[in-house]
Structures are given as C-alpha cells and as structure tokens.
Amino acid sequence: GLGGPRAQRAGGQRQLAGEELQVYTEGDECFLVVGAAVTNGDKLKADSDGRGITASVSGDQVVARALQTATTAGQLIKALVTIDRLVA
Image (cartoon, rainbow, N blue to C red; front, side):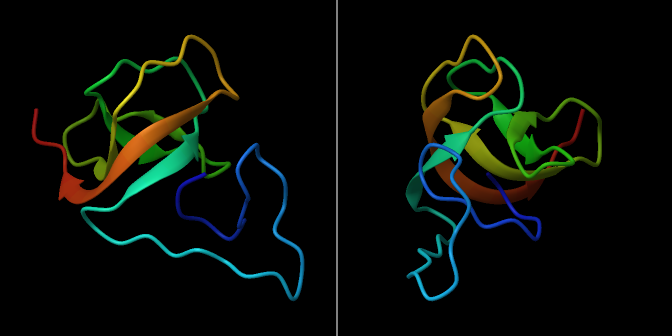
C-alpha cells in the first residue's frame, strides 16, 4: 500500500522484522495494492489502510499515478510514485 505505518510486500503480506524493505521515491515505478477500482492514469491517494484509491477532492495528497486498471479492491497494480496535491 501507500504510506501509513503498515509496510507490505507484494500481494499485501505484512513486512516481517528483519526483512529488507524497498523504499520508492518520486518517479519510481512500484506495485501497489488498491482499496477500490481505479483506472489507468488516475491520480491516487492513500486510504485509511494505506491502499491506493482515486484522489477526487481538491487538496487530496496525490502519492502515485495508476499505470494499470483495477476492477476491485485488493488487486495489485503498477503505479508511478508522484508527490502532488490534487487541484480540482
């Protein structure tokens, strides 16, 4: 997922103590678990569980852009890390 206190591995598994953690910065491509359906190109923010959802309100903190479409929550997609604010 994105941000938040929960570090997760691909597939939504929790990061275990002592395991390496990959950190992504702006411009990096990563895999992201979504919290709802998203469309390729959507600007994404983190939901309360740290999963990517479409940013839709002016002032939302955008943390990634979807590089794939997901039809339901829990799917893993490619995303581009982007730090921005949504301006509607």
